Image (tube, rainbow, N blue to C red):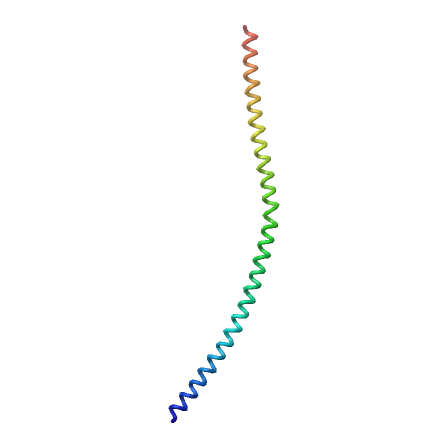
Length: 98
């Protein structure tokens, strides 16, 4: 009979411990859920800030690219024009010498 009483007490203690641990796990999971919600809100705010910073930078880069292309085009046109001027000057010298 003593062994049966010991087993009953042991099972009661284990059951009580399991209930306490289960309740603690539920509280930890609720806290973890709240932490995940806050983290999600922070990530959403970070995305908003990143998008608001990215937009002006993309605009400035587009303007800078347009200016660079314009300069390259102007240099190309000026090299063509200067090439024509050099050819015209050489032809005029040939006509004057004749």
